[in-house]
Image (cartoon, rainbow over all chains, first blue to last red):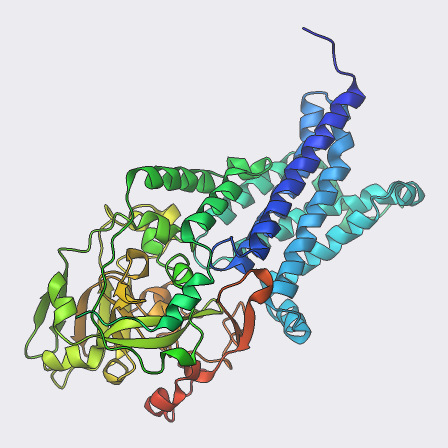
Amino acid sequence: MGNKLTTSHKVLILKVVIHLAALLPLFNLYYLAFNDLLGADPVQRVIHFTGIGAFNLLLVTLTVSPIAKKFKKGYLLQVRRLLGLYTFTYAFMHLINFLVFDLQLAWSLFFNEVLKRPYITIGMIAFILLSALAVTSVNSIKRKMGKSWQRLHNVSYLIVTLVSVHFYWSVKSELIAPLFYILLTSVLLAFRYKKIKTLILSMFGNRTR
Amino acid sequence: MLIKISKSYDLKESDVTPENVYLNRRELLKGMGFLGAGALLANSASANAIDWFNKDEVTKFKTTSLDYKVDANADKLILTPESKVISHNNFYEFGAKKNQPSELAQGFKVNPWQLTISGECDKPLTLDYDDLFKIFPLREEVRRERCVEAWSMVVPWIGFSLADLLKKVSPNSSAKYVVFETLHDPEQMPGQADRRLGGGIAYPYVEGLRIDEAMNPLTLMSVGLYGKTLPPQNGAPIRLVVPWKYGFKSIKSIVSIKLVSEQPQTTWHKLAPREYGFYANVNPNHDHPRWSQASERRITSGGLFSRNRIETLPFNGYGEEVADMYKGMNLSKYY
């Protein structure tokens, strides 16, 4: 074996890989879409690509801590925030694609659709919660929040649940992909079974704080 | 004698990137794959495998030029480019994704073909492949097509009136409805063989019309588009075009037309009766439960920014020709 990489090198390499893997497809997508090289309906394509991309990234983000625990690779936790922020970026573009390219800034139609269509409503709730996590990911804010930071960021379990329902409700008849994603979501949540049980109990039981 | 298509089409087509260029671009994007869970998704992985396989093994379906009477009003509407009409299709028999039919249907065999017209009529009839193009003089009809998913196209169809065909079989007085059926051939139609590809709908695909709707001069049996016979992804060799109804009514690759006395059970209506009605007339005032039908995106040439969201018109703008048939009907109840 050659020289062992230091932990900080490993983290750096991982971060570079994450940046490339998240950004290159996005640049490629919009390059093709703006130049009408993305099939007959680029609007639908960019909406679906960023939506499923956000979901993929969210699942990857939630995979980090079980893997770090299982294989005792604590340094992996250092890339969680970056993955979470790319999840937010994709979700943000998903929303922008819907508002700007699909509805073409018809604001009243946008608000109507958000309020009237359950699958869009819960997608929007998931996005608002995700935004709260993105904003509070800044170090200084995180420090100021103390213990309530972790409490807030446990909301990611709720977000992933909402997102899987959003996907399931959005399709016409092809249920296999959404069901597969619900399965993945369930597996990731199952790793946190005890934690989630405690969280739910503390919501209904007597609060200690 | 071949009648040349007017030059306005050529202009439109020249605006468009050649099909092979953008197909390659899309492969590039697909091939990039995606972080983590995306790569594990069996669904897209197998679809890609089929795409690659298909490209290597199967040559492109051959369409041939048709003789037809040109639509004199053709230049009143901006046509959707041919490359988009033949690459963006809802034809679940060849895959539930929009790009799949154009990729998975190229080996489809349309000759020999048999279309039977039977049921409540005096002179049932069976047409062979060649009959489809010879039984009546063909004419071009440029029509707006509105999908229930809130996008639309303008397509220069070629065909003949369904009314002419039905008159030939002499319907009797019990003929109140017409039922259409798509070919059922899982060996040729991968979506019928594999639920994952076929989107989980029941096959064969069935659609229906009331007899007066079927007899309306707007109701077209189409055997071609853009001057040539239909490509398989658009419903070769013969399909229905009912331009004032949502696209799922315009059934493709028809093998049977039957005159019946009762309203038939149709495919999408059976699957989700609250979302898809039997009538399915384009109606901006009756939303789909999950999205608004008040407006639509017209698919033309150009990228993300050039797509136009336009108001959806009652009966897709064909009210003058068809609204009388629904006088006194509650169109929110009979959607």
